[in-house]
Length: 204
Image 1 (cartoon, rainbow, N blue to C red):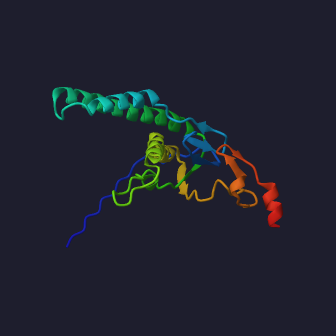
Image 2 (image 1 turned 180 degrees about the horizontal axis):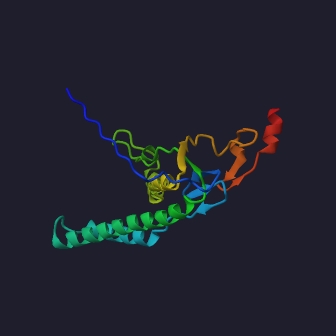
Image 3 (image 1 turned 30 degrees about the vertical axis):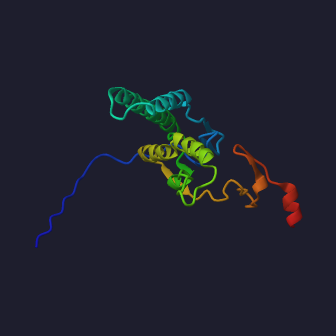
């Protein structure tokens, strides 16, 4: 039995991140990401494309399947889907390319997006509740492209010699980073954190 080993020598070196320090990001819908250095990534606006897509989807219901008019509308819907995906990817590339140069470590929330965006319809025997509202929330979640943003930051941080880490977001928005005091009252809005002083005094 013979074992052959190959070695490759290169003059290329791994890049060294010139930026120092770390930053943490909180995913959201009203704000796509809110970072601890006060940088806010606005939500992706594809409202015009989604409005046109709904219009064509309504027209599609009245068309005979696989007819020429049906195929034309399906083609228009597919074109809008590609446009939405391209807008999301383009805006994400613009932000991640600039932001990855500013921090050595970026910490993001470890979210189970698939479970979060699961349908509430369930089954005929056990129908879900508020299915329409949940469908709207699911669209808003998927529209933000959190997974794509994290993926792009990961490889761009590697190019810069930096790092992206993920941690559980459970109660992270309610914990004080200095004294570790946890309370739902600490976080009134996504971009404002203030310790609920009166609640803390009553607990003592």
